[in-house]
Amino acid sequence: MGRNISVLGAGSMGTAVSVLLAGNGHSIKLWTPFREEADMINSMREQKEKLPGIKVPESVYCTADLDEALQFSDINILVIPSQVIRENIRLIASSAKKPKLICCFSKGLEKDSGLRMSEVIGEELPDAVVVAMSGPCHAEELSQGIPTAYVAASESRQAAELIQDIFISKRFRVYTNPDIIGTELGGAIKNVIALCAGISDGLGYGDNTKAALMTRGIAEISRLGCAMGAKRQTFMGLAGIGDLIVTCTSVHSRNRRAGILIGQGKTVDQALDEVKMVVEGYYTTEPVYRLSKKLGIVMPITSEAYAILYEGKDPASAVTALMSRDRTFEPEAEDIEDIW
Image (cartoon, rainbow, N blue to C red; front, side, top):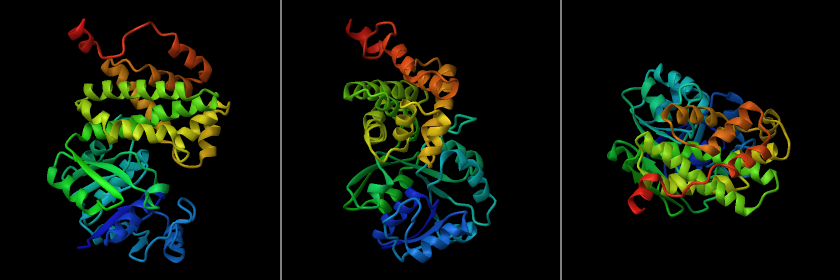
């Protein structure tokens, strides 16, 4: 039986999510703060600027009125760039109808605080139950019905299973996971590694280099995540290695695209401007770097990414620094000690 569902954010992923849910028989109220964008989607049945060529079903109605969207449903799907989550959640918190369930597709850490998205939402809407959605998925492919698998993570099993039920289809398989910390961290930090993979491509390096970055990248993500309370198994699944693979290798990846431009010699500002969409890896690098220093976690790839993005380090020099580090072993120290 179809439900009324509100999708907050009408960019490429918000539109793709709306198309998917409409295909599952639900009625969708899609919100954007921009009236021109709402009019475009309603009149043309297409998000021509951010998801061209994809027909938006008639069961999706786009509105620029946030109260109208919130009144429509008790299930709110949040698909907004991570760095504007707090200001939008404050708008939602000031509305007449405060959501009790928020399903968040946004991937990133808040730049100033380093908080995960569910933590930001929890500070502004303490009574809301949050489900984090993450995994290997590009809006361009999701909207075309290309088979995709994702994770719904929450401290509430009931909430995670509800989101699983409304999303799951023959083309979109959803798994549940109680580890919301690991799910969110995997989705956020993989963007940092994907930026580095793009830089590697831009420098003209090959598959060997990218495979090394991805493998050692997931080791860094796992190391920090476990120190923050996540489960190591999560990083071996869809929200960890799965999302990392797709973001480091895909032509759709805006993080990889920005990295390629930087590797080719563009400045960071030039690269961000040329991509024209939000490059979450740029904004996530700084809080991840700060967290690694605060917790004493060794994250050499992230440290070099920070040096390139925020201190102007030459990308080729950063690669040399990574390759010239002191020799060490691959498994974590406690594993080695158990064997040797």
